[in-house]
Amino acid sequence: MGTFDAQKALPGLAYPEEYLRRLASDLSEKFAGIFNPETVERYVLESYTALLRTSTVRAHLASNTIRFATDRLTALAQAKGAIESLVPEVLFVCEQNAGRSQMAAALTHALSGGRVHVRSAGSLPAHQLNPTVVAAMAELGLDLSTEFPKPLTDDVVQAADIVITMGCGDACPVYPGTRYRDWELADPAELPIEEVRIIRDQIVVNVGEVLATLGIDPSWLTSV
Picture (cartoon, rainbow, N blue to C red):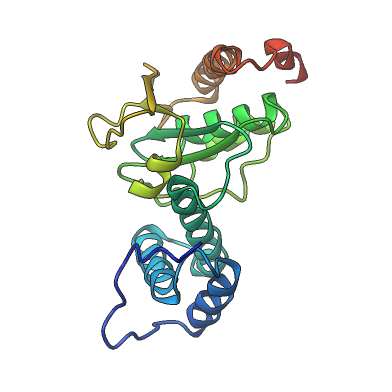
């Protein structure tokens, strides 16, 4: 299968950080036969730049760029049919990707037992996850401490079978064949943990309903 030239190379390409050059080289090997090196380089630099805008802890920027660029390239390859999706793909989108969409993604992964692949993103991503949300999820034994807000990109939307939005308006592009749903949930930003727990528990119910539509036994809800 030939490579996809999804992006054109940047003229006079320069890497602001040396690790980005190594990352681009490693990912070019990983996606060899799917994307050409110029496409990979473009995605690495775009991902780095997007995260740099909201990153408050530079020490995590390298690892987060690796995860973000890899996930975006994987999503694009899935959308192009170059990588097969073996399980349903669900994308959760809220405004900041710091609360609702992060909880929904973690709960879907846990409650499906890995039988659903999840992504999350924000139309206006925050600098960090809501610490109260992290604490509320920890009460269920779900660790969000390594997660980070990610900007919404076209590739992850294209790869999704179901896109679930939560208060992000019309920011999400619409593609034929993709199912869209909107959950009306309060924004947990600046709410006390007692109210965040209510939002979390409603997400558990909503996730159970989505899993049922995918033919996944909602009895998995008893695991949380």
